[in-house]
Image (cartoon, rainbow, N blue to C red; front, side, top):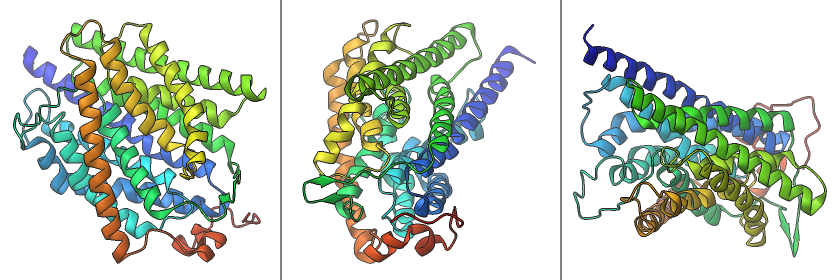
Length: 394
């Protein structure tokens, strides 16, 4: 086997392995969200996560990949492996939405939006970033570096989620006058399992985005990327846990998990651009932002049952901007370039998502009725209860 063929085979295997790790994030999101919602809504949350994966991936296969990249060509690895790696990302963008609108969203309208996200919205964002802007040419010229998607994936999903929450409103009974009703997680072991599956999947998410592992230099780059990814997650979890203990003298495992995920989101823009210590600061700030953002959104009466806005939107923005501040060794990465990308993509995704969500809502209502919410979405949407032997809390 000639060296070029060996490199082709190694990079193909690497892309397929990274894709498999990313797909593990589907059950990661599902378990995390299932543990954070009430037992009467668990089956609906699991169904939504699976539906999002299948319909968004199919939409990306049929339409979205061509919109994002313009053509089906790849020289350094198998085209099919390159496609599968990119396809693994698209479901994560809409998975970010699934938990944030849980316990009051109907499945069919959300699945319709997942089709639009996989076919059009997400691919257009990819086109002007990773896809070399083949549609608009140099007209937009974002000049934003985003290795694995702090903005392209996490903020994109976060902006779409914000549009959805503003459209469908809060869960029934969540806000009563000036009071915020605390709705505790139903299954903490599932929360931890889901969070750790997401953490492991992130190694394929960020490491695979380096693109190659078939040389010493690229292997070192992959290893550094995964090291920095893990470090940021560690720092986010430590800071979130410490802050919760300082404020309440209690260790809140849900906040620790979300703090770690916030650190992982924050470093995703450029884990290949940092030395081995800078991710501690980037991820630590990410964990702190989660602790501050969760009650902030509640004060605004923006009901997010799983903290997805705090983890993905807030830290997607922070991570992209942080790269413009701390990427000392790459003069092509500037704070203004990163800020421009954040603002343009944010305005586009929020505006287009809100318009499409509004249109779908006129055809098929996103929000379940108060009676359906009281009964639980498992019964009204799926006909199968996750815990039929338990008395369902209202």
